[in-house]
Image (cartoon, rainbow, N blue to C red; front, side, top):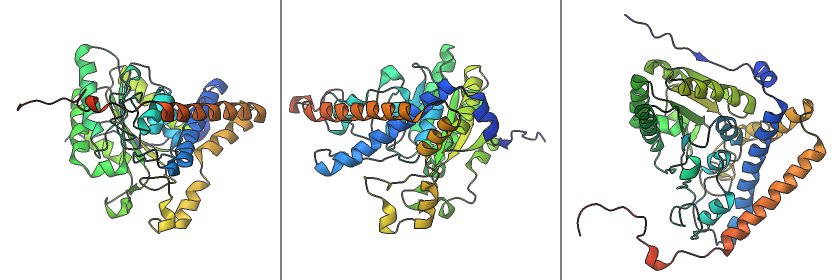
Length: 343
């Protein structure tokens, strides 16, 4: 009998912090802060009722997108979910075009037809996010297969939540990617809830990274609110995939502050325990990264204030661009829609 020797491991926080330069830490903080302010801006404008798309906010999970996407090139691919804003921003998408999409405008990244859950930006390696739970995982594997067949070193990252673990497509994709040694990173943002169903009610154990061993690939579990831990785990996985070493599974344990959908907090509706929610608020990735930079003297308070002012201006400009852009014309309804068969 051949025994699988792949082990689940964790990242040493001390070693991760010491190996990251001050310049990289500043870049990570800027991305985290930009994602947070983008989501907070949506909360601010949503009551105006002119943004009609449902929004799934990633407040509390920002460190994951930042820590992963910093290692990706423009030609690398990411595939995301209904909660995709942070991933798109971290990969380099234009926030004006994103906001225009949320307002259903012609200048949006999906020409106003996709909304918040269906963002695309092919020039930055975002071929489209999907609201189907687990739907992006096999597509990422397909992109990885294309890279393999073309002989390139392009890497694909599939972002998904713990709810996607309940889908057969996750297991089929893991199996095929490992069998073919494809350059794919399976990145699970485990926030412990699928809508309002706790992980403990759906799965026999909460260690998703352990699943990697059954498919002959490395699995690692990290604190998803610690950007340095995410950074180190993602670097190892991306480098391995790019060098032809095959896929990896990274489980980032985190928590979304807001409801499954919309700007409200579902704790107020009794959907989650308040003490659990309050505990995770204390692990805020923005504040943790901010404190780290101050402790390491990588940024000063004044530099942080200037950065915040700059980002706030970007948000105001994005909203103005979105609101002032034209709606698609009715004659464009079927443009860019693929249909096969029939008349």
